[in-house]
Length: 341
Image (tube, rainbow, N blue to C red; front, side, top):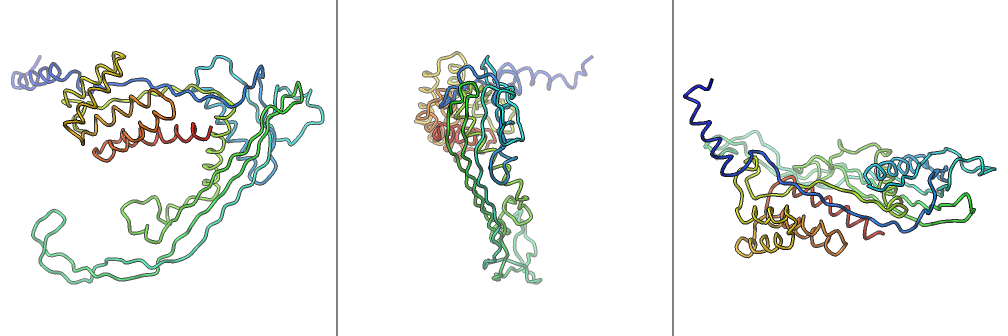
């Protein structure tokens, strides 16, 4: 039984749901990205990954195997290709190998850390105090700061990977496809970064070299797989109705929400028109920019993906929501893959 003293709160909750809809409900949509392969594997049903020539070749095979499995789990493609990872360079009798084709090649991988120092201006306390205001704006004694210049160590990590690969049809003994992909990496850890607000580039955050190589080989594998497999990946993305990020979806901009309703009903062109109209009167409306990004990303071709990227950048510039950054990183990755193809 409800306590009568809690009834006003109950009525308020019912009124809010009636006015704004389900509390915490998030409007979402599906975005399907299709990446077309550069080559057809025809009737091949099993692909064997042979040992590559060169150092760290096992990282190539591992990354390729995992990436092919990942892509085929995400795609809606009916005819799957089985992939097997074999740690041998060659076979005297390919007929004994239970595969329709093999992929192999060569790897050149280098990685090095350059250690050095640089002069950095540092603000430090003197141990003396004066009347002033603290970080909360309150009157208090604050420590007097001084600027000193120190030699601060840093590490510059550089890595480069080049992978030549080819695919051979074991039945016809003909080469199906051959190409080369490369990835470079350069990042500074320490130095001035030690005194910045973020932590990712401090010396203490320097990862093991093998971890950096694994990340680079993962990128290489993604590019190779994008060349030989047509993939159809469906993502669920979230609209933004313009409510405060702490408001659990309550409220929001009425016109922005109207555009979302149109998009949910399949009327994307009308939704775009509404969000554009919002920006005519509110040129810094981050939700309108973000939803426009979704609309253009949904179209999926390279030209519209670049427009979506611009919209997401505007959303990030004018708003502080995690979904904006997630969308920007997502579309950047898709553009990178399509442009390389």
